[in-house]
Amino acid sequence: MGRIFEVRKGAMFARWDRMAKNFTRIGKEIAIAVKAGGPDPDNNPALRRCYLNAKAVNMPKDRVEAAIKRASGKDKTDYEEIVYEGYAPHGVAIMVETATDNPTRTVANVRMHFTKGHGALGTSGSVAFTFNRLGEFKVKNNGQNLEDLELDLIDFGLEEIGEDADGNIIIRTAYNEFGNMAKALEEKKIEVVSAELTRIPSTTVELPEDQANEVLKLVDTLEQDDDVQKVYHNLK
Image (cartoon, rainbow, N blue to C red):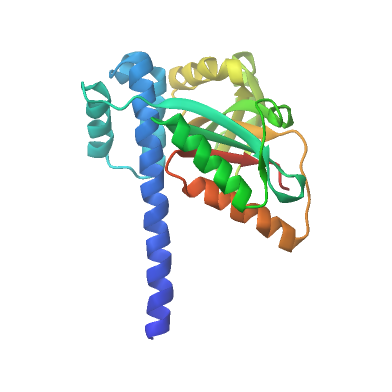
């Protein structure tokens, strides 16, 4: 019984860790959005997106409002968005998006993670060509016909449409069409679960399980870093 309890306790702590990391990530996104467009979500599309993404990870509304208040105060933290590129073991490309108040600390930590994970931090542009920057919207499936929805959204930058494993509709747009699609979905009253800018690999690398695990260990280490927002890779 004790062993079962330890396993369950470990899973619970892992879930809490993921939740804490998500809340920290959203908090930084809120700070950046407020700095760029102000604290009023009605006039700040980026902040409205933060509200959506906070809801998607079950971040309480009072924590969202507290983050907006902090971002609007005189003692706010200014975060800089920096993207790092590199290679994991076995030639897998990795892109790391960060939000930091100390770039010197962040680059040192990211380089350390790559080195310890038997990878290498690259220069700007070294792997970016491997990824397509896209807007991605997760939309609640209320029985919509995908073909009809595709025709309805094609003029607003739609590039791809499909479903995920949970039955949600996934809509992807070109990077520069993200705002147009967000506005169209709002006007058409289509319920958006989450919305983000993402990076999709144009080519992938397939590896044996033991080598793939080496790559995923590095990805996990990078994701645990407090300054890291998102990690993308082209491991199949």
